[in-house]
Image (tube, one colour):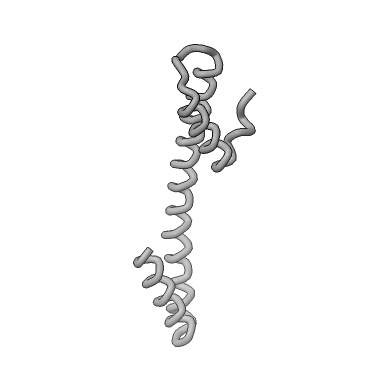
Length: 87
């Protein structure tokens, strides 16, 4: 998060001193951190899919299911909003 804080400080400094520099830095900031959000969303979607598949396999009897693992999986799915995909 240190890079984020430094980038934010640079952006604020440019806002206070030079409007053109601010606009350039603002676009760079948006591009840089938009990509970070997209990557995190992709990782979240991958985790959600994996947890959903594990749950479906367990519910269908394709794997041996430990109740502790089931509780953790269901809790994780609920935390990331994945419990709505279950049938």
